[in-house]
Image 1 (cartoon, rainbow, N blue to C red):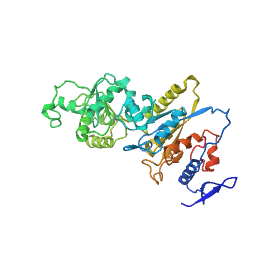
Image 2 (cartoon, rainbow, N blue to C red):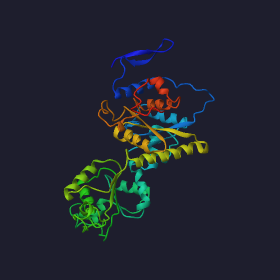
Image 3 (cartoon, rainbow, N blue to C red):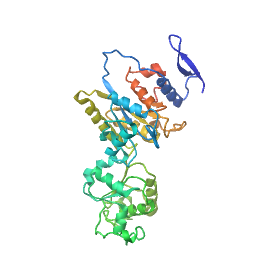
Image 4 (cartoon, helix red, strand yellow):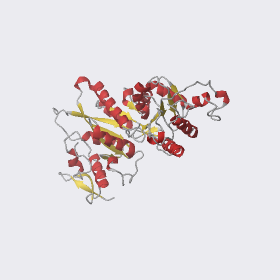
Length: 401
């Protein structure tokens, strides 16, 4: 792409501009982000001028701060900078294996930080905690790759009565012959009633587990080994399926296993699967948790004199998780949400083509440090970006900063 150098008032080269005016909306988004990013310093404000609001940040982890086995450039610097300035931030990830306490410790160790609080770490399964008041002492089936780990995390949230698929197979060998070795069999417990099914990640035994879940959805009130008399009744909604107090299913994050289970259920019953909920990004439940815990952390930092949060910036690399979730949250949230798409993770040029406007970010940036600096500049002057980034199609995004 061809660039020409724009000239500042004193005649010096200031920053590159394209030789032609942006024609397409994606082009305008990139140019606006690029021009703003190339401003070297913050616009100066008077020493006695105090911002009435403060920005706040929500960070995805993988692809934004971390890449497989190492920190991404600028990640540690960015987080330390925000801590130094007492600007609140939290982490919102679809990782699942860490508890909030473990996640906060991992963040500190990985990015050489101190003072990271567990309330700053929100994972996909964190939303399971919202189900605890409803199922505290009820029997809950946990599905995932690592049975012991799922039990540990579920009990951390506050579920007191949990069971795994392998334990059910071992308790009911007559129903699930071949699913478990004889030496692992457990005493059969009559009337085992499952009240909820929590799927943490892709199951270790998807073929077996999809059959178990299907059996429970065909059962009478979720009791293992039973079959509901309502199944197949044409006079009952949904053909009588899932109309007899069978357990609901909650997925920690969007999983491929969801599609497998839905297809298997349709093949068995000819009806669509009901009573399923998917947490994790872009779920509004997880974004609401992030907003709530971000505000709580902000008040911990600043106490009663805490300035009002003006804008919450979601910085992510996934259009359909980070950006979409932030844009949806902005519609219903108490606070204004804006989004920043970074190019260090999943995003590749062209991915926005043909996408719904709901998947479009407010800005695009090359990395997390640049993204945070660009976001912080928006608090200086209501329309500062128009001075630095040029006038663009304000009809696409909200131009209020």
